[in-house]
Length: 325
Image (cartoon, rainbow, N blue to C red):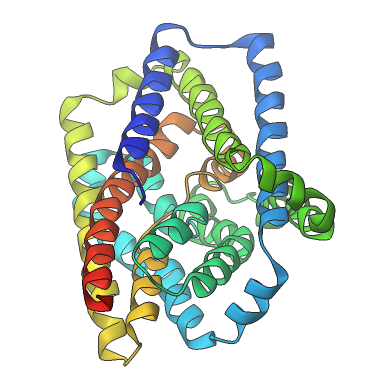
């Protein structure tokens, strides 16, 4: 069963990275070397994700287009609409940079690993989750920069070129993913012998990115701009957003007539946003912007979604087991 303790441990590590960046921020030449190592770690992570994804799961999942269409609508339509509608309330409370980060979070694709893990625990359609989450991340490499260009940077930086950003994102995330798919017959047997390697790269690369991003933000005066009340408002906004999305993702599939397994898959794939893809995208898209302010909303939302989904997945797993018995 998916252990909440693992989530808490990663949450603690993320908080420690923020504290470490606050006390000992990395800058100058060491920061450039560290950023290069982080980029390599992220590329390896997506290579491993590509090698882990089976062709059979892709083919089986693609056939269920109605499920993927609904997850796509949640990820790239409902989330952004709510984020844009919240502007009159959130902009005065959070300020421009944090609201940009909140809106950027709404534009991001779903998670891959946790969506599949929670769906599996709750006895949902795992093949559908594998295909839907992976498809969301691949499509997000194109859609997220376009949404950022149109609703955020295009209004303030008229020379912003989404095409160049898309190419950089594809080179960093998609090309390693495709290489992983091509080399899967050779790489996956080795990964099966060390199943924790993907998780280690997943969490390790995120921790490296968070430390680097917050180091540069601290050097630029992050904690002089964000106080306790601002953090409270941001956490509350993320919690309210997740609650609204989860209610819609719970009742809408039922109303549309999906079976239980598909309802579980839609719920977990539609309600989450990726930190693993989000922070590297932010580094490419928001050059010259306070990156720590931009990624803070997705960091907070990511931890809330993991803890809430962990509780729900465990409950649904017990319910499914009782029904089987």
